[in-house]
Length: 124
Image (cartoon, rainbow, N blue to C red; front, side, top):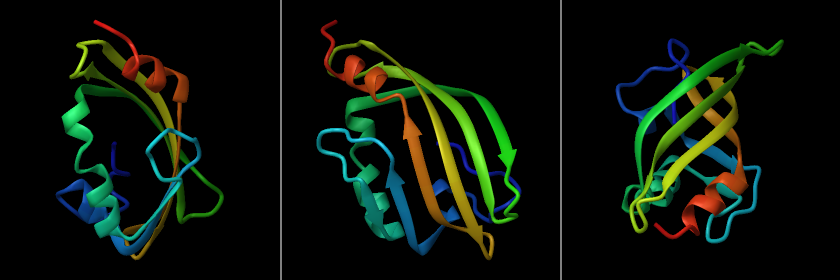
């Protein structure tokens, strides 16, 4: 996941989030919570990601500024593989991010759920 460069302070992705940040998944994916409250919970939720999907690249980043100066919209793609099957993993995202005091307070994520589901359930 990209971070909104220049709008937040950090060297590590998770440091861009305020302690009380809310991460919302605007999709329903088995085993994944719709809302994650707090940076520590987000870190715990994403800690197993690398055990099932290995990302190789991210690209196609387009940054949109909102009329609300606290809000930025990111469009991006990720590419990798499903480790259990070797199947390719290619997905597209849009993330609507609200920033206050140079920290993310809300991340609303939209992804191609079918691409994720298909990749995770395909045989090599």
